[in-house]
Image (cartoon, rainbow, N blue to C red; front, side):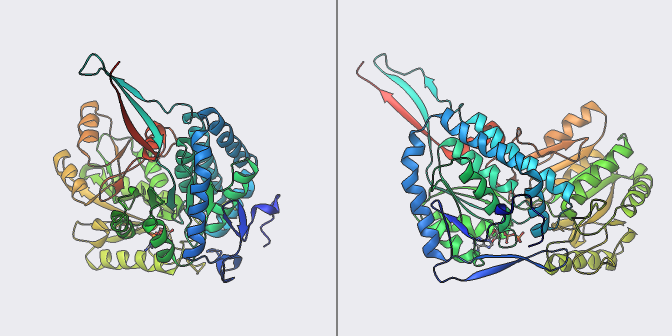
Amino acid sequence: AGLGLEDAALLRDRCFVGGHWMEADDGRRFEIRNPADGSLVATVPDLGRAEVRRAIEAANAAWPQWRASTGKQRAAILRKWADLMAAHREDLARLLTAEQGKPLKEARGEIDYAMSFLEWFSEEAKRIYGDTIPAPHGDQRIVVIKQPIGVSAAITPWNFPSAMITRKAGAALAAGSPMVVKPAEQTPLSALALAVLAERAGLPAGLFSVVTSSSPQEVGAELTGNSIVRKVSFTGSTAVGKILMRQCADTVKRVSLELGGNAPFIVFDDADLDAAVEGLIASKFRNAGQTCVCANRIYVQSGIYADFAARLAVRVKAMRVGAGTDPEVDQGPLIDEAAMRKVETHLGDARAKGAAVAAGGSRHALGGTFFEPTVLTGVSDDMLIASEETFGPVAPLFSFEDEAEVIARANATPFGLCSYFYGRDIGRVWRVAEALESGIVGVNTGIISTDVAPFGGIKESGLGREGSKYGVEDYLEVKYICLAGL
Ligand code: ADP
């Protein structure tokens, strides 16, 4: 498809089910389009429930052997998979940009990030430790072992088409559990490329399947309803997460949810302002504002507000917008027209209620789904942008007076994924980090994602943690063995 891949086999147009590359039973396919220009990148099979059921059954059939393997054996395969990702980094990044739109430098960053989870969990596979507990009776011994949860399912979003899969599949496979992945309908090609590499790495058939479909409800109903599946891990919108959690109730599946955020980003008056501007740009405009940890509400202390806004506007006006394949570009297109409309709705509402545009503010002259990186000043809590995630390149600046006030405002949301703040006073740093209601807090940084630390939210932002030593726990069951009559 003119992507110029070194290894053309990484662009797959079939699904990977139970170790076979297959079409939909009825032969139906759907289109993947490049958000930068609307061009057709590929078509992929449009699976229904029957094929998904086969993927689940294949996973279940493959499970006993995988469960019985040693951590060292699982580690070797995951490590090989990671190494293959590293070897094909450039092709994987090109594929990602073609279907998702993010600038190539960000796509390369995502491939590195995605690879890091396979590497990390290959190491963790050897460290599935249990526990021994002093028993209440002398003739007893109490031992706790951890066992793989079994067949798991992942439903993943379009904004990180590669990393959201390895972060789940790496943990599941390290724990000894197979996984069936349903990638977002906008970005299945990165998922299929991962399957190509999993197969090359020698992962036994059935342990990792990728089911593509344009009917997420239908596939979701099978993944959540099938009693073989013991765990569903979802990254996406809060609305869909709640539906899946309800659907999982009937068979009491374990769920991990990584849902929307509404991240506050606080700049205190003792902050290094230039560092805060850079941190904000990194957090706010990554992937054109389309990440769940993007700063959404920027609170700037009143004494430095004007200075901070001016410095930010200068930097944002200098950002270059264009197709992700252009190496000079800082911001690619938004994913689709619906995303554009949400940004416009938030902007229109804010302006109607008195906010001023300090940079950007409109659709970009390039047309399509390109939007200008935007800074808003004079933003207040009654505006839509204060309570909803924009998921676009708009930085709204709120003003605040003191610490207690800003903590209350930052926490006045049902979401709790990530918070950021800049400040130097060590007492305040601890107080604020502990007071913010979120699973992640970035202090004097706008970038918090790493394989070694636990990623996840509280409140309506989700359940469970991914990555780190905690991530593997989500795919393990605890078994207590009481050995008596010694
Ligand atoms: P977004 O609005 O960012 O696209 P979604 O939550 O709609 O976020 O999508 C995230 C993932 O959830 C995608 O893989 C999508 O196909 C899937 N999805 C959407 N609706 C459902 C549903 N009703 N059941 C199962 N999966 C769904």
